Amino acid sequence: MFRSSLVNFKPLFVLSGILLSAGALADDEDDALAKAQAQMNAEVMSKPFLAERPEEVDKYIESMLKQNVKPKEYQGQYWRPGYTCRDLLRYNWTQYRNCRYYYRYHGHYYR
Image (cartoon, rainbow, N blue to C red; front, side, top):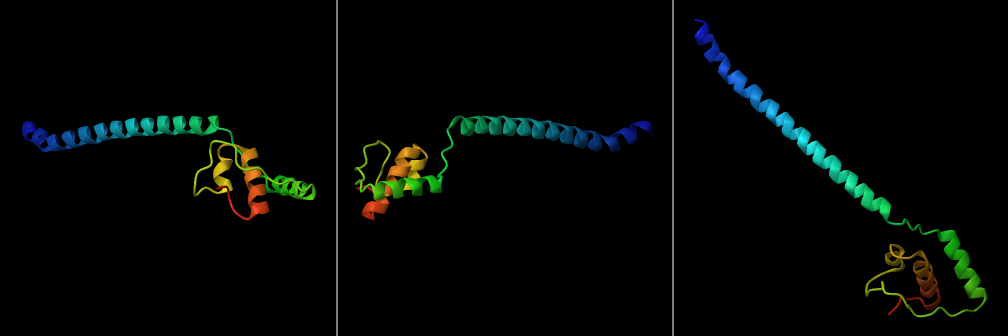
């Protein structure tokens, strides 16, 4: 009689073993996700953050317009066809600012 009751519990033992191993896999996935998130955070934080600072750009543009200074053609290495000034912001704030001035002065982006 004792033996027959163990047979009835056998599927329960197998099921509990599966659930325990699934929990261990979930913990491994959580660890992998945490490591990937930490790596991505480190990469993002290693790059400089260049904010638009529109007030500063507007002051620069107004001062250059008052001095009647014609903006120069683009001299950098980042400009690509189809870009806007915001695309330059990821590389260099000064190039972004100069692009905004060029656009304001000429009414179009760099060619």
